[in-house]
Length: 546
Image (cartoon, rainbow, N blue to C red; front, side, top):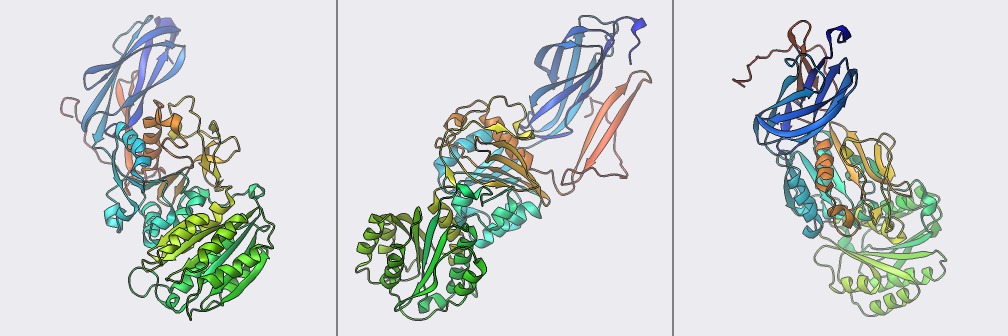
């Protein structure tokens, strides 16, 4: 400590800046000051010789730490200098220090959205935060690990799982878990549980689960699945040769939906070819394995009589007393529509909704009209490999419990670097209900204590879940908030781990008593863990040569 008898003395102990930054990246310039007297001081901060900040601070006897938020400038080597002008001081020689950072070009971020309008505010915010976003549709998501790895992070904006092929979903998981990259998923009415993420690689990668732990919130539902088992369902349903048969994917879809239902829900499965046959008679979802075993007996063969299958489900639904009654029709062919629209109208009149999943482009055009008449949803599955996600999406959407549309003020649940430098957060007007995983960090929650912002380390990479949206539907107060670019910039940057070889943090601090400069080097691996017992070699350059 500074001796008091030498008179009032204030000195800069250290000035710290990250050794490596990217253009536009936010960081703190950390200043440590030692003093033997209480006084005030002006702090002058310079970047590359230009005065960028002038602050007045109060200094107490002992050690003082100050942090000044900064933005990294243009690509290249950047120098920072702090000058201290205290009210009370003896020696001016120890009131100036320098720090240096190597600034690299902007990080490339891939933004994936089906509706460009929903992603536009986010793209603008990421650009303002010094990132380089590229907006693509789900179909344009790179198909290889080599291609997608040119991006430091991927951001999904309200994209339902069926919009991706099974291969694309697996690639996103590999991109984070094995290649050490970042993933941010932004919500909306077609995301998370409402987007069919249940039991997909996407759910495994995210810090939240699609099921609700507080399942008492879910209304009782009767869900009947009407499955086409005609001969055409025996063919391969995935893109390319030799994929799973459509009838096997239909079984997997039923399994996925049953797993998402609660024990007080009721399920029924009726198949049809030339006639209808009950595979699973309407029953509570108690013995899930027995239900799956019964579904496993399905075999393809015969014609396509959609009316027979729907009529069987409609007759049984008349006996159901659940609050929510929903039918999902799965077919891959065209059939005579005679009588079917009228039956769907009758179902709707009795508070039964009908959704339709059509496999392939050969499905009859009238099927889309059926879903509209049935107050349900129409899904065209060009790749039958997506129908398990579609059925999970239907099971979640039919309950109407996963989409929460109400005003809520985000509550801080845990400290997070994503929220650094952000004060009061604006209100939100909706989100998708999820459950946090055990090892995830939930930073923000809703008034119902549902996760709004969650993050975690997943394998070598990181992922962030934001369960509200990023545009005017649910986040209308956010998109006009001055902190919007900083929030999303920090959210994306948190997921970015600096390369598989890790990074070095080099800091210099003077030892004024001994008249030497001490260098400290911290080596981090890709997961952010400290590396020990390394042999280091480096070159020391004067500021003029750097």
